[in-house]
Amino acid sequence: MAKNKNNQAIWNTRIKKKTSKLFEKVGSSIDIDKRLYKEDIAGSIAHVEMLFKQKIISFKIKNKIIYGLQKIEKEILKNNFEFNQEYEDIHMNIEKKLFQIIGEEAGYVHTARSRNDQVVTDFKMWIKSSTQEVNDYLEKIIKSSLKLAEKNIETIMPGFTHLKNAQPISLAHYFMAYVEIFKRDKRRFLYNIKSLNECPLGVAALSGTSFNIDRHYTSKKLGFSEPTKNSIDTVSDRDFVLDFLFSVSVCSMHISRIAEELIIWNSDGFNLIHLSDKILTGSSIMPQKKNPDQLEYLRGKSGLAFGNLFSMLTILKGLPLSYFKDMQDDKEIIFKSYDTLINCLKILNEILKNISPNKKRMLELADTGFITATDLADYLVKNCSMSFRKAYQKTAEIVNLAEKKNKKLKDLKIEELKKIEPKLSSEVLKVFDLKNSINSKKSYGGTSFENIKKMIMKHKTTK
Ligand code: ARG
Image (cartoon, rainbow, N blue to C red; front, side, top):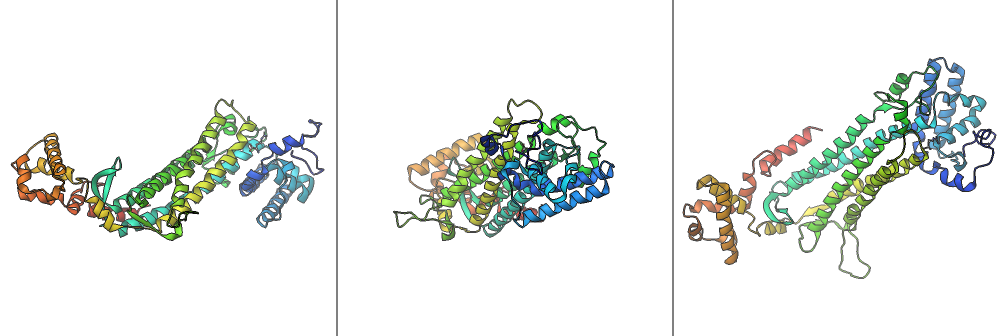
């Protein structure tokens, strides 16, 4: 329960009985929202500067309040601040402390504002700076992926669809796919920042205020592009929370997909990559084991992110407009999603720095499963004047023949091929070469070595 300097609830004139201990405990959010202290103090400083500019409070009171707030910030930074459950949340903890430091004049800080606008302001500011943090980590992953791509332009592997050998590709093409994925994630997070960039401060409880405040001034001071336009919407809106949770979910889903991919590649059946011992764990009973636990951790954590998104959607569903206590959980949910994502990003980056391809095995696997069949079909279209569907059917016949004879496509004799398509000459044999196949994929975005080199350059020179 929030209390004034006499250790009584701020609302004790109206609410005469002491809050039950149980509710005091469950109703308090200070253990969670103390993370917003910096934003809360910055918001209060901007607010009192505005109140002074608008002649609502005196120069002396403004300075006293700012002095007190800065002192509180230093105490919190030095771990000298005692957060108190009795004062419910970060806003009341700071206000209460302000009374202790500067006395009764602290009472002016809450002129023309409410915790309802205060909390959304703090929260939006926190999301802005945390988004920057997320994007910094995403940038590191993009760099690591680019490095892996650069090192593996000529590393040939099978590209899969349905996890069956499909067409040969460069391993770098895979890592460049990660670059695209994480750049998209970055943009999604940045887009959220644009859409939450209206400042809530000053809408007060829900209807605005009778004081002659300047919301444009506080908005600018706090780095927002403009003030919000409707006071009821402002205190009710948590769309920006959902946007953030959605972006975390999408990013976690991407991490989970990559983790699963690497788990498959690392499995004994595939054996396409090697993971350094640094990122592996052992078994308590099987002495030979080296398990990719960290990748499994990444794969699993997306569940938490999706759950949090759904929790928040469920809390908001059916909630009438304006402020309700239901919304207080938004911070715990977002902090959990954020902390987990940051952990996952750090782990993924560490993993990317500690994997190496098993090039021999990649090439071996790429050379199975009639993987250049599409190249043969394309060749037939280009050189034997037939439609793609016709060429597809002829190629399928050739694949059937190779399978029956237990041969690879490249090991079929030209005479055998000619029986199926008489127009073929021995020139066709080059299409079965894996490198040739990869380098023929010169279409924009395709896997040819030249394309990849250009894409790496492009990404290295643009943000
Ligand atoms: N700690 C509260 C929250 O996070 C701040 C807003 C409180 N407003 C109120 N009317 N009780 O939701």
